[in-house]
Length: 335
Image 1 (cartoon, one colour):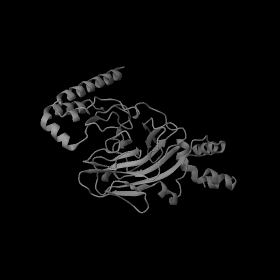
Image 2 (cartoon, helix red, strand yellow):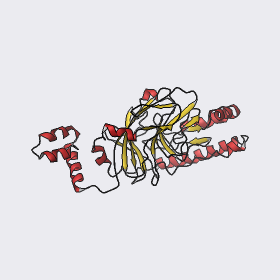
Image 3 (tube, one colour):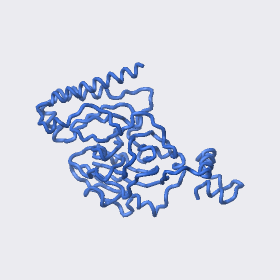
């Protein structure tokens, strides 16, 4: 009861301060003022604990596709910012040190059905201020001026900031607030300026007022509590899970632990794994692990999943020593 009351008070105060800020910025040209909006929950950002995808456990147990097939699902050098260089294997890209730009890239293959898992490797020491991983349609721009969260800045992209633990979608307003942390799902006030030059102008004109507003934002942001702490920064290697049956995007750790749904409402689109980066010489690797098409699992597949679950990962190596037909042992081990 008390927690709900505090949440409602914070939401009311957030709306009041956002409206007050718009009033304070009234001398700013109309073109800018028209883009300033009060805090709104984005319908694509998941705000409740949706369950993990139904066939995720089955997909996690499957081995990765063959290395020779990986390139088909890798980065697309023809669908990237000019500052990005893709390796010969098409699995890794690096960003040339380019001052004051944010650069993006999409994968070769787009996905519109089934459930899919990718393994993404991005060292935490090579991320910079805005390291964003997620999905996008073909309409998302791949380069922008200044340092920003390009992926998730418009209605055509959805991204997770790896170092802030914030979810971005359609945040291209001059003043926008990312409403949710991941994986906790707590409300978070994160003030963001869409243009560095505009940020400088606003601080010159309304420095004291903006300082008060930002101080308020920090004080009302999520506080430590009994809930699970934010996984910030994300580990160097993690998994991304896209489920078109449920229309959701989520992330998981290497050990298979699912962190929860980050975005929802993604049905009926063709989406590409995407990244936006600002760090010079950063390197990001994308490996497609596997996917399942939208069809019911066979009884044979469900039995295999039950056997593997009963044995546990630590005892799977002993399957080859069991007194079972060779074909059955190979099936259990995905051989």
